[in-house]
Length: 414
Ligand SMILES: Cc1ncc(COP(=O)(O)O)c(C=O)c1O
Image (cartoon, rainbow, N blue to C red; front, side):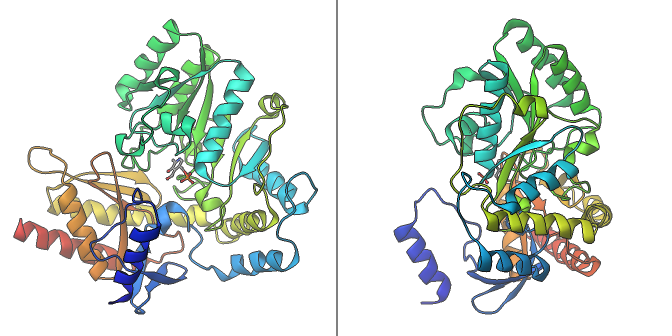
């Protein structure tokens, strides 16, 4: 029995069957080094998914590790009823990098929890209970956030409270009129929640005017806007937060994933005025613990010191140009979209039918070549390019060369 069989068998035996995995023969990852992963046999892989946009600063980044290990050796946890320095430092640093007047933060552990908290805050501040959400959205696994998730495969709970949610089209020419129709008939809306670029939904990237106009419409009716930057945040798209590229500031922003670069940490942040309404007691036992905060502070330092926003922008444009060349060669590439190093390539057949099996074959072939690529989209037919932001131009060249070969072999055998 090789190590993969052994791990897979234990996974089936002891974990819940709801957990899916990529690949027929999944590698067992044993080590990470910046943009590279190694399996238990020592095979090296170029990581182009970063654990779903988490490892923006690279695996086991020594500059970050130093600070996290230093914190582990001094103080790990006391909980937030006591004072510690890292959590207030992190809140202060976040207020400096957050856009506009976003200022106060609440720390927790996962993206789901951050969105749940943001939605709770919106209800408390407005005294209203319902939400407007974009189709194709993914906001989490808790009760409220799963109900706010539109992708059918991520709505496991058979008893979601449908009546508190309106889903509107993410087609730019329809969103505004659908939102306005809801606001005209229902005065019990607390907030509109959106991902600036829908990650799991297939790297859906709205036009530049989109969120500014939605924001103006919402403001006319006094509705809050919550921006879920869980997947797009922390330099991924070429700016600290993706919404900055849409030229507006939301009322509440949520973040997780890349904030900890592999250590669980999440937050929701808002203006002083909205934060002031959240006075009923709330706490998170592990939220804002010193180790998580030390990691997040090290991430913010690393992004600044290594100018990762610029790096994601420049390398993202380079990758986009090279993928555009592939698009000219292969008609199954229906569309390329995204910003910075968050790019998606949608694969469809001659009648525009989604090609999830072809997407899987490409992932398998790239794995053999030592490349870990992601996939997402409603039909799981979108190749997702979301590498650690520390990749090099050579890494991009290698990826594009192997992807070209994979597309070529699929064309020949199709
Ligand atoms: C945009 C977005 N929001 C929320 C979540 C949920 O985050 P978590 O898995 O940390 O709970 C995800 C997870 O992929 C996400 O992509």
